[in-house]
Image 1: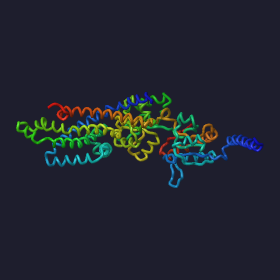
Image 2: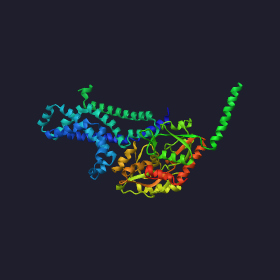
Image 3: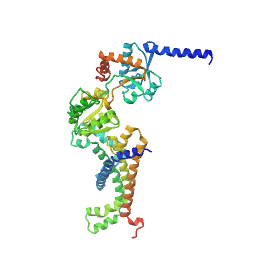
Image 4: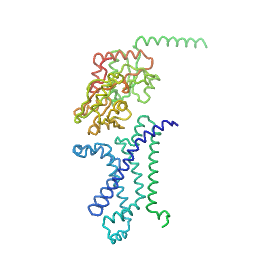
Length: 228
Length: 284
């Protein structure tokens, strides 16, 4: 085995890790906020229709197609290129982040909806009787229970988003996969290079799995045999 | 060994000894088989009926006419083409073969018939104008390349330049311009560079003269090549015809032909005809 080669290869690939993590973290953060808004919108009839349509389109089309639509598609229009949005959409980074964020919001809003629906009605009624405002109920009762219910499904979404960031290498971004692809074009050592890149994602997924299962235990100790 | 066998061997030996100087004395009577790909536009292409045409086809036909060579063009896949020449399946290759040190070790080359230069391309709307337009910067010569790089870097400082991954041009940007404030964005496909250049996502692109020419043919009203043409060094020394190692007769005959068509401007005319600009040497 060519140890010095693997060492320098890992160093090269790891230089793309900050971008991969940056995209994954911000896409999840932005996606979560947007998912929250989508669920709040579901309290009204029009809002439900809007949220439903949004989820239908973003969950029903491939992320890669969405990415290409934002990167190649929208940029074709002259009025976009002369608008205030262009400084943002000109950069592949923002196109990638926006696509990931919008896609993540669709999935997360459905996960969150499931969690919200699992909140027993009685808890909210009890909170209202105790004199809490709607915002207080949301913050103190509804959301904590909903998030707790949604966590196992959401950990899937975190891992999925982490891996989806690899698609941004298609729009000239140099994340872990982008660097791997360039290295393959230069050296043709596809097996070694993609194996190393895969290993990096595997370690990231492992960390996320461990972290979320710890969070589950902390939030629902009674389900894991803790003393009541 | 029997008498007959000895006589046969002797005859074969003398025939071989006689044949060699005869061939070197003049090229008449020898059919030169030249391999090409027939799929590398606009240098060599194949018509639906199998007929080869293109810049390089015109080039070798013109040389053959002037040097009285009898040539036969055959189509071969690029994969394994040089090995086929080494194995003696044909006498020469004309397929845009860049003259590199590694290839020079296994085959001989004629003079280059293209300069192998690379140039920057910009959209007119971007308002970027690189200095030293139309000049040539020789990478092997510090006196030539250093001022050219300085001048180009001064204009492109903070600007983004797109290039295809793993090409001589990407190696050039990395080695000469990346540390001078030029942002390099690499693309897996060459066509994506032009796509992003057209919509203004990158400020400039860099590619071979012939590649840029193909883009300008369709977008000449909106885009332009600008700045010096970079040749030599990691940019390569242009394309030449490859012949078998030691086949000096053929090499000399082809070189004589090339010298003739360069001297009277025929090569420049052919370049203009097929590429829309002169990508060929003006003199040897």
